[in-house]
Length: 437
Image 1 (tube, rainbow, N blue to C red):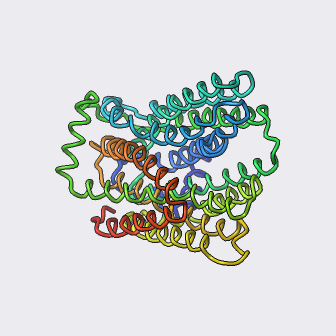
Image 2: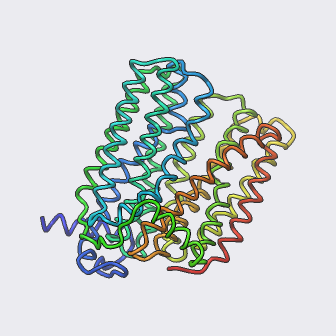
């Protein structure tokens, strides 16, 4: 047992670059002693979660599933909004509940178990149900899966704030992102091997592996050694909403952060349109998609640890720089689409810009996650995270509709110019945020 503790400490020190794992701030002495083991457990939990996320992707796997079972085409357009907004919108309602729980990891465990059950039921749907009924089941299960993802998200930030010291949280998320990049590489390789013959049986296998990934995540989380925290201040959903709105008035930094985060949605919204431009110009189908997925994985592996270290020094600067890079990527993609000659009749120019935008988006995600955790205190961290995520979820639904209409009327290239302006505004807003590290 002692040897295991020593090996965990060594691994922790190697991953964080710290020579002494016992130096902590913002967490208790007992939590500090358990930090190396908890760091490793949360990293392993992230591996299971990211693997499951990739193999049940609403941008790749589930659209294929709807097509394979013969579901109506209009259902495909609902997948991404349900997946993203469904996991963000309910979080303000969870914040008050989680405050009354002495150990918040069990909410994280519950979210993982429910997601595993949903993935298993999706696999069964792929095998046994088709047509409109099958599509309806897929959408219903995706709603439940997304809500469970929201539960886990709130608990994840709160548990991390209690078990990982300030100055190391960005590093943990950075290595988690690197693991996610490796998983993305694997998912891309699988999709390339499937070629144009992705049967419902193959999709069922991928979804079954996703279910096992969430089970593994839940098991690792259950082993986290979390201190029992204060339970005072538990409140119902409407009290949480009122207190959250009051926070936006009282905490100017929190309000400015949410403005910056909203503008930074441009990096996420631009990714599928760059991929779409690449497909339109290259004429490639699954092969080009596989290239984009592999490049996305490589970019995440390279970018996340670097952004994580920088986020521990200044998450404000990470958001600022990532927003600026995103603006350049959007402008570059539109310029490539307008360039004369045959060199754009290939996926590679768009894939290069896509990879750079993935790097920028990794910085956006790491920067905002680290900033909100460090901005909040242990007493209101869950509420800060939940309120910010709920606001983002609502705005994502609205922005998705508007962006879709603009793309339909103006085309993807003009839309990318508009997103470049939003990303530039996000960079300027983030630059004006106060430091919290």
